[in-house]
Length: 194
Ligand SMILES: [Zn+2]
Ligand SMILES: [Zn+2]
Ligand SMILES: [Zn+2]
Image (cartoon, rainbow, N blue to C red; front, side):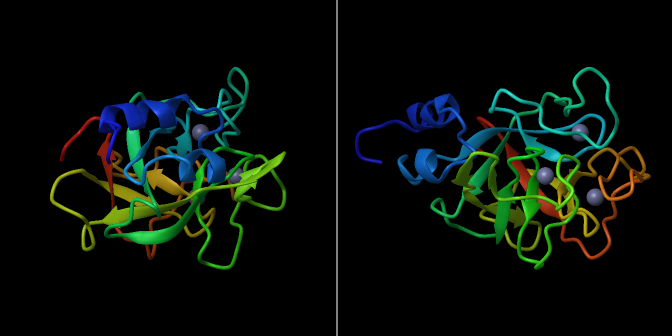
C-alpha cells in the first residue's frame, strides 16, 4: 500500500455507508482493505453485517425490531481483491444482512424474503464477493475455527462454543442449522494479527 496505512484503510471501509453492498465502496479501496463489522447473532447464530444501520431480519423471532442481535465480536472478511487462501463465492444478502454461499445454485432460505437470499441491496448494488478460509485451506495459523455452512439456508453460522449445535435458529424451518457437509471455516478478529 503506497500512501495509506492499513489502519486508515480499515477505517475508510468501516466508514463507507453500505460498505457491504460493496462493489463501489470496496473496489475503490486498496486491495488490503479487509472488511470488518461482521458479527454473529446471539439468537440465530448467523454471521451478518452490522455496519449498515439495520439489523436485517432474524429467524429467531421478533424481539424488539425483529433484527439480529450482535454477539459483540467484530470479525473481518477477506474480499476477492484481498486474495489468498480459501473459498470464494460468499456474498452478502441485502434483505437479511447475512453472509451466504452463492455457489450451490440455490438462494437458500432468507428470513426477510420469500425467494431466498439476494446478493445485493433492495435498491441495487451488487455484493462484494468474499473469501473464507477453512482449517485445511488458510493463509496462516490462528484465527477462530468452528464456523459452519448450513445447507438448509446457505448461511454461515457460528457453531463455536455451541457444542450441542442446538442453540441457533435456521430461517428454513425455524429449527437448528445443520453442519452436514460443511467445511470448518476460520474467521479472524478485527485488529488481530493471528
Ligand atoms: Zn439473528
Ligand atoms: Zn437473506
Ligand atoms: Zn440454516
